[in-house]
Amino acid sequence: MDLQPVLNSVARDVAAYLGEGEVARYIPALARVDKAQFGIAVRTVDGTESCAGNALTPFSIQSISKVFTLALAMRSLGDDLWQRIGREPSGDPFNSLVQLEHEQGKPRNPFINAGAIAVADRLVSLHPDPKQAITAFVSDLCDATITFDAEVARSEAETGFRNIALANFIKSFGKLDNDVATVLDVYFNQCALSMNCLQLARAVGFLCRDGAHPLGGGRDAVLTSRQARRINALMLTCGTYDAAGEFAFRIGMPCKSGVGGGIVAVLPDQLTLCVWAPGLSASGNSAAGMRALELFIERTGLSIF
Ligand code: GLU
Image 1 (cartoon, rainbow, N blue to C red):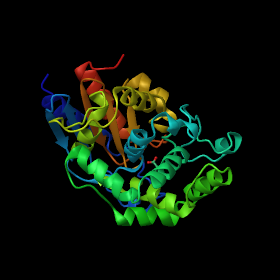
Image 2: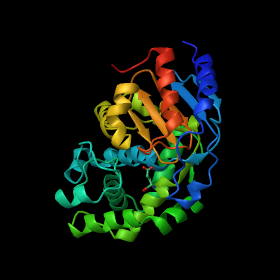
Image 3: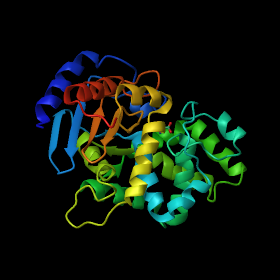
């Protein structure tokens, strides 16, 4: 199937919805982003790439980074990772504190902030320079030099009172091995990775290739096929904040969103895609991005179900 005409029609039709939602104002550096932007990129398992709109404009990937840090931690730790992190949807907001109290500092899943902070802690233990390990990993996945946006990272650190509270709370239960400030520095920076839609569609390619490197060509596998399946399962059930049920119902693909307005989606064995539109719905997911995914599914007939 030639996907370029589909992407062109999605980009054209979604333009009417770009006014929807609000940019993430709680991170000052994101509050200034122009809402009238939309990008979409697709990469099929055979490496065919198609783009439309602002697919090459870099944006703050925010929580999409949680997919990469999870993959990096799973590579080294295997099933040991799950001793301190659960695999259930939280049903609470992504930055909620209450659940952690009830569950003695064990975050529900790796895609809520508490879970990603716990993953960052493991990366600090595993890598002498965890931030460098993250940029090296993501850069290799999409064959580009990916860096942190220092202004966004600073902005998060200055206003991330809830994340600071979450990290301290986990630490108080003895479930964070490293210094809170060091772990948060990794977390704030991973959220501040700057990438475009095409780079993201490439970088998550291992999830539609049973863990094999997205770019193939004899490169080492990223994960085992079992690990890749598990990340897809977590994305389907926990990847889009409190709207995971709605995403499964309306879109039917494992997705991970970020408050920068990006959403990555996976159709195992077929393709990966990324949409970006900065206006967020009340659930924190890109409003126009979600509509674009729905249009894509409707016009291609693709689904995991
Ligand atoms: N940096 C954001 C935060 O920690 C990430 C949130 C997100 O994209 O879900 O609040």
